[in-house]
Image (tube, rainbow, N blue to C red; front, side, top):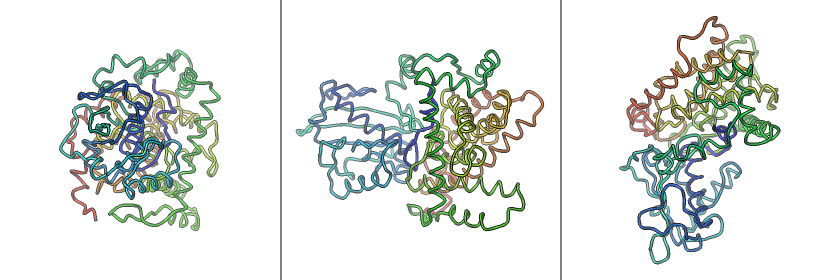
Length: 474
């Protein structure tokens, strides 16, 4: 079972699959050399494996393939690779320091691998955007190779950034059955692989989804550590909103998109709060946009479950589970654990990668998770919670990922705002329903998966269709 603290991961914007994933992959590749261990996924091609040491490396080359190449520049992927090669960790590094470190590599043509082994590095030569190669196993492919001073190969590895900051080697994707035990972690008291199994477990144990998730997390760590981790996630979400509300100016990139959250916030607090329903919508919009403007600027966000959809779950957390910028622990725990229980079903049964599923796999999944979490906070039964999750996805089916200019700005920022409001409505509809839903959560997840497979690659984070070609990116 995937841990809730893995599904909600603190990292850097603007993309979990294109920034956080590649950053972690680059660091993992070098760490494998440092540990004199063969990197997972087949260091092949006649290169040495098993005995390689980082000290022998004179050159590193990174090939970005598929969506990582096609929208890599706009998503910050090349700089993320530099950060990873430097040994920086997305969960802990200061965003300003990380971006300055990448700029220093570009300025000097030198890089300190894992912060200590300095070699020459020319991004124009050693960071290759392979636009023509679409990997067979996943659209977000990376091939990394290390060479000795004489040009001989030391190691080679192929990885795939699978969404939400997760990544897998070729071996792991080609032979998942062999890796199931390792991937799933320790045995948990309440395993479930479908919505139906989750509801059956709730019925037989008398526990709600949050309690089941918390019990499963206890197989990994003491309960107090899990709750502290959830508190840190909630704090990071609220802090991201605060930063987004305080900053203005233009977002990076050729679109020259201006931040709006600060001015909207000032307008909201200055005007009379007459129409409660309309005002509620304004605040939900505001919180989601504040997060995604921070994400677009390369700031610190929480993958929820991805960076492109990072504003939806924090928006509802702030409105319904917080007092000002401080989360209410009991509500936040229930909200995040329930949302995570739904999110891991999408991760296990389909995908949370926009490059595989389109934006239905990012914003759609986040909307579904947020709706479920809010329904739980409002006292919904497990059946109602799953119904809220189903409604949240059902009305995002077919949502495309067509970022203009390859930037996580248009339509991504406003799309998060729309989905935050939609998640609240999905929770309300589920709680008002008086009968068993005709469409189950499992059915809608499978429908999303099939829709993603049928969707043209032009609409799956390649910027080759939709708004991306009908809006001038300059």
